[in-house]
Image 1 (cartoon, rainbow, N blue to C red):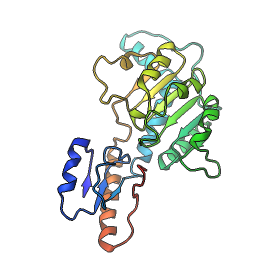
Image 2: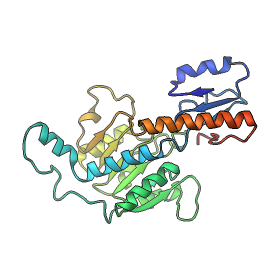
Image 3: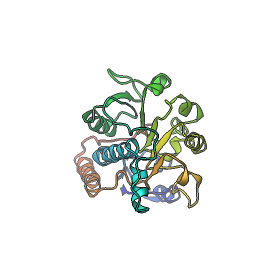
Image 4: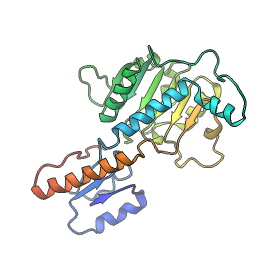
Length: 265
């Protein structure tokens, strides 16, 4: 069975499907499905389909934030010739340090783009390997980063990961980029840091989501918000369906499936 964006309330029908053996998601994140899959049914995600699209959004968001693009857009709309609203010169990526939390295929795609812009990249994943740290190392890595990119999946272990202590450990003026799931971040704690001007953020996802009209996050200083569109390209949609088609072929041939989800990953 192939499923797209499935709200938790709609997953109840899975249990009523006779002979269901595999659920193939068209999304890379499957937090809305985990916990609703009947026993004995294999869940697979579309990891790899959205790498380039999300990585391009991350690069776009970082460049926009670092070079003060939102203030120029505001000035253009006001038909006013005004320099950046940020104090001092805008920041180049060259020579800066980015911390990627969730160093999987999307993380590698982000690193390639940031490295091409001259940034040093610190990598964090669930399991340590050469050149890749773990979550236990995050407290000592956070102060080193001008940009922190969230790409981890939403699980019970990562929900609320970016809390008051996490944000307090980030360097003053640092940029938090969330291209994963809104519930990774404590919105109240983030609002406090944004309002004080100590941190900035670029968010493709929020908690709550959709972000309600009039929510204080909309008007918080130093934040860029897009409505969960980082992976929304025609190419990524086609890649997701190609993954699904390949999975059907593998299943019919009795070949082991790819992208099998275990513990939410």
